[in-house]
Image (cartoon, rainbow, N blue to C red; front, side, top):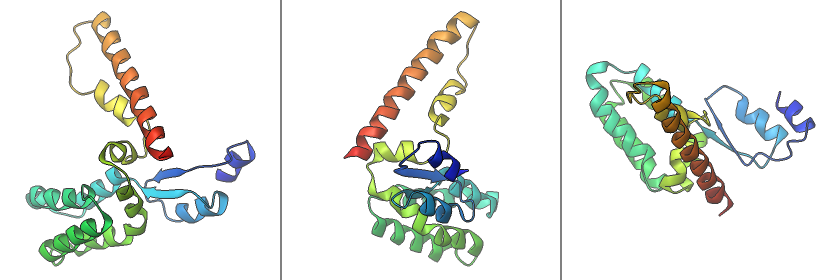
Length: 168
């Protein structure tokens, strides 16, 4: 499929966010060697919580948040080590998940917080969809259209922020 995209004219892919599918980073590297492959942070977090008990969710959530909001890769690794120290015996599979995904997670930390918000998910339209389904009450079709239009404009603005951030 990726070779087909290249053959149809897609010359470069600068940044690819994937959901952790085995072998995908290697295939991308064969097709586009310069591509930065990033694991989807949303998928990584969801998979982490599938491996833990609900009673520990809040404490683990704070530990994971410290990892993906860390200012540098070293700070994130220190936060992962802290999480391992606190929860490694109870949930070794969760810690193993983060350690195995580390090389595809680290590129995310090279960007500013504004860019990270856009790069964290595989779904490019996620921001638009989440805002349009955020629980707002639309009394009728006439009130829904302006709100969806504003969300679309905001999504376009965020995509321009992404392209400016990657060019720098």
